[in-house]
Figure 1 (cartoon, one colour):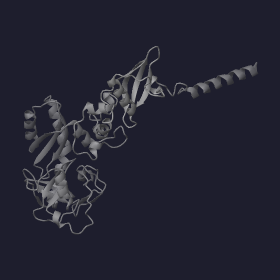
Figure 2 (figure 1 turned 90 degrees about the vertical axis):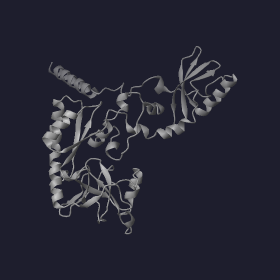
Figure 3 (figure 1 turned 180 degrees about the horizontal axis):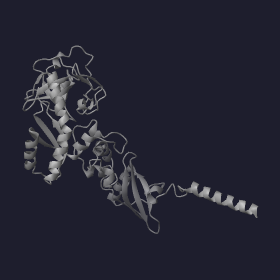
Figure 4 (figure 1 turned 45 degrees about the vertical axis):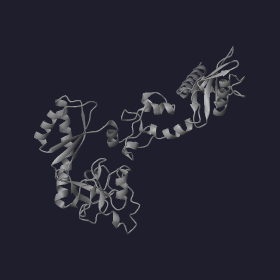
Length: 378
């Protein structure tokens, strides 16, 4: 059996088929949980629950009713509806209960059971089920195209006993796939479950490299997706270009929300009604803010003078606003006006240099050499 058949969403470090143990020490951050209590001997109070992972990012918690001595990486047969499924133990001990609290799973809820450690017959059926996944997905896509359904079959996950399959699909609108299910049931002879996923989940399943140069957050450590709005981008004064704000899933990048709380706290020091400041010889109009430098940019418009972009500290803006409330107008916006040249005009660092300047010089030298040779001959 090749190693990729054992991955199920997490690349294995070592495989022992005889003991039915799959080690994944260097697993991705989303599926792997570091067990801080693995070196502590007395962890018996957490043996009644275990965490089991399946294909892609699917994990679940099961009750160890038979109190089996389970280790991380072991294949186990667990309860499913109907039949049983084969999964890989990803966490044992006290931390399982902490993970259940994290995902808000009550101990009193109906939690499925761990039947036994996987036997050779179970593993053989599991291998056959895994081998059917790729051909089934390709055939299902052909059926969906034949029925002109506006949906994409992203992945197929067979249950360990080879009696049920979960079909993950993406669709922008509601799809009537009743006819598709009839065709699939007649051809595959299995129970079918259709599960719709979003574009973010699909990007996390496929993976990739983001514009920051690192692996996508949704494919490594993110499990819960919080809605991202354009207001978050406006608050951080990011570029309104949708191509820069969108990720590989064609949605707004999740990292836009990472620093939003810091900007909310920093924005509290800035005045909200400072769009226009009144001066004795003109007015100043607000352009943008620099949150971390506590600076506001204003366009200074004075009589018979050229407009200037001036940086004003927040404390000075508060002073001018208080003066304007009373009816007073200061003479100067700031004591020393510092022009911000990069806002007034765009400077091209390559305007004096050309990419083909070396080629042109070589051509000139060659022409000069040819002329000198001709002169000598004459």
